Amino acid sequence: MGVRYRVRQFTMALGANINRERVNALREYLDAPQLELFCSMSSLDQHHGWAVFRTLREARETESSLLRAALLHDVGKTIGPVRIWHRVIAVLAKALAPKHWEMMDVKSGTWRYPFYVHRHHTVLGAELAREAGCSPEAVWLIAHHEDHRRENDSGNGRNGLLAALQAADELN
Image 1 (cartoon, one colour):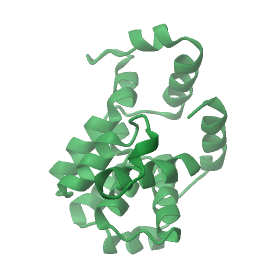
Image 2: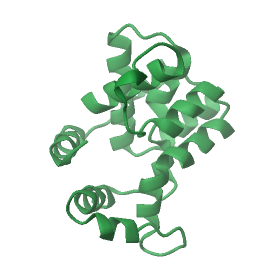
Image 3: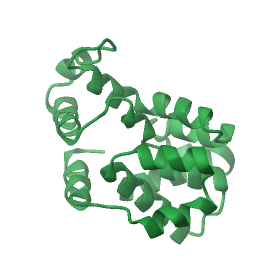
Image 4: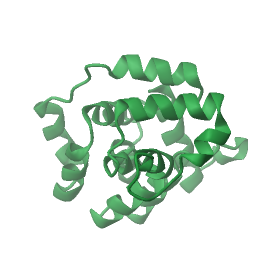
């Protein structure tokens, strides 16, 4: 995912908002603790999760673990919290100054902590999802949604679900 993708994602999400009707519709897919996690995300991440979910539903995906993972795949960013300006800096640093990006990976309570969260949001989010009662499959999908895609990962099973999640994520 390059800078152009991130710019497109950013502009699409400006002013994004998830209305109460959509949140209520998610009760079919998320139980109360999981819905609470979804609602704890920024409006930007809620909108993005909803868009990924919608893309999968339009592709006639029905696997509940996949749909939960779509909605919650960026929930780890709530820990930082990771603000929009952190995201912009992260994308630019990764693309233009990868060595500086590596140095921003500090876990302690410094100004760099949101960058640590951004970088590790997959594992952090997977733990939040596990604590909220998501299935091991959904937790695994959240933990691995940013793994590099390989051509042979598009088969059935766990890798097929991951490929579907990653494809929908890339579109949104």
